[in-house]
Image (tube, rainbow, N blue to C red):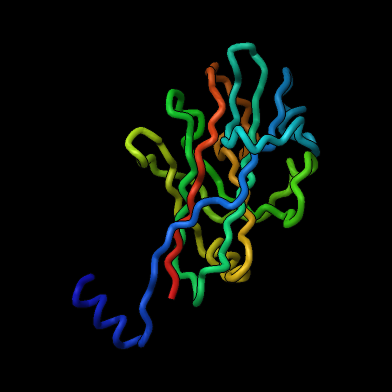
Length: 197
């Protein structure tokens, strides 16, 4: 910590703490089929799967379109004070860069996840992502939540944050993907890093 940081902390009378939280719940709400608009605009998922946790929007080598929207929950019960900054770390599949730009939204269902939650999202808490490597060989996208995201997190301090992660350039912007890729399932956890005080 720099001298300036110490002075700021002394003047404010408060210290800040940064902690990393592992998702308390994760599930991919997914659809696939031959017509992109049908998959994108559907009101229900074909499935939701807690053992394959990715977000993606791609065209497979079988010429079908695959969309996966990632529902995440984080337990904020151990957080006290006001959240000042937050980053999300979303794991991406290692052998294909399926998702290089994500958007964070609010997952609007706070109850049991059902296939109808394919469209349970609202707001924009930031989009983009910087590739970082965690645990030696596991690629993640790191993205800072914007002011709207921080405001939302502060409304659920002591409770549960419900977030939806979507691929930005194709799913969110509703652009039909053209790349043909192979992809596999991934069960790695995702993380929320918060600074509060």
